[in-house]
Length: 370
Image (cartoon, rainbow, N blue to C red; front, side, top):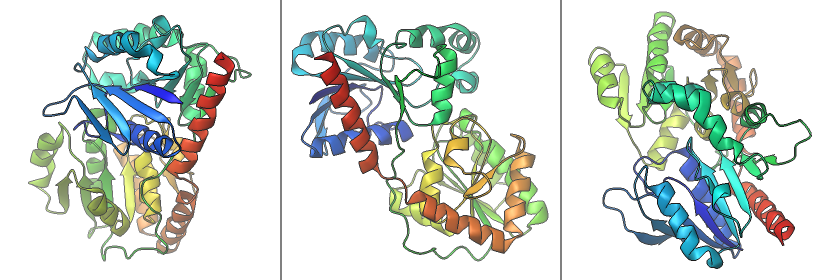
């Protein structure tokens, strides 16, 4: 197949996250299977307008907002070069059903904006997107095949689009995993250590993780915390917390080798997001033998098997996050059991399985269109 894939960012974009990892891992594996993969995406400072990464052809044009118009223009110019279009939706879709007539479309949705839009955008734009625009935008995809990454997002889509249980247009993709699960449990830090890993953005609630750590220290005085990741909140968080607490270390953005090493040495991962598509960081930590304590929200309730590979909080508050963490840090036998379960759970996931599923879906859609 000759696949044209629209996404707002590519794997080299400084703002790339879990969605871009998913995209690149799937596309690069489809290249290895013999498919021709082109990603049309936005430009960023210092980027090349065209390059190939792991066999994926990357065409960059436009910026954060103009990418959507540029994508439409590119398709009109190059439509005969492709067999199918993948429309990856990150809040704002490319609205391909409005201009892609000749080729079949597959939509990829990691998560709906919903609640987290209020953390990232100011009023009234957040209000307009939540109450009107998101539903309006996605209504164009009601009859389009959709792939998503968790049952939570699937159910949210069904509700938003008023789809019946019998609808077969929404397919849940098996989540992939870049980290190779450890063969045996890694050696943990000598003192209880919790970690936050992810972009330092408001909807990820890194401040909740740090506030929870302060509560943990009241019951586990020798505990320490690692904050791994970068983002616009970093300076604010460092100024507020690390200057007053030498038990918190901010590592910033790290390479995978250091990230996985730190994950493996930590005892617990704290994940207090407003919501996730799946929560790739949870599975990565599991692969390093580290269970997660997470808020009971969409996506995280899929990636965390409550009471087996980690815990979902009773309430989505720093205090509840801390209480759950304390319960494991003070019970070494139970923590060890959770760590083993988490490591075993991570072995179920691979990007190859995800790519195999994508290939089947794409081939079926093209055949049906033919």
